[in-house]
Length: 238
Image (tube, rainbow, N blue to C red; front, side):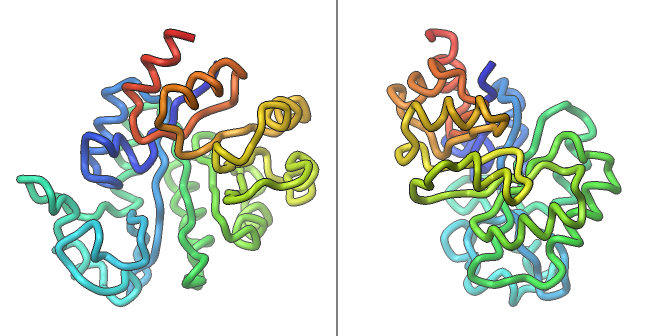
């Protein structure tokens, strides 16, 4: 049964990567959430996609140049009425204690290789006992290999922008249990063959009815979507 993972939370109806977006995803019936993590100047793990705060908040500058106290003062819901702070990963994990959602954590460490990020994230996962509910992904495959070495009990999944030859072989070689490809770059037979070889396939970011229905028909492991409500509707129509 294909799982529905809400990309940056229920991001078509709420400000992305905010607690309201995550709670909205849960209320919508999603199986899990996807979020992005970076580090502040004082080493706190915060949930935000872009390296700069400019697009999603009322602030300006790089995440890495803000202290945790400073970044919490920004409004992550700049298009809405109610102010919302950028969440910490710990805040998200506290909330996850109240549900059974899975969480895909994307390490945003391609442009800036945040020193110690992997150790900090894994330490927090273990603190909350969430090892079986977390998938760590990144476009930085060196980072997810390092995560596997630090915590082989936590699932890892490389992210891909472009098609890769025999992705199940590559995944097995780096001990990843899944792949997160761009949905438009992975054909049906590669999806099914990858899953037949024991590797989970969770394409992103799947928002059109046509694309959702294709993946549901294939019984893909999961879809990562901005709109879990639409995805659930398409799933029922399969």
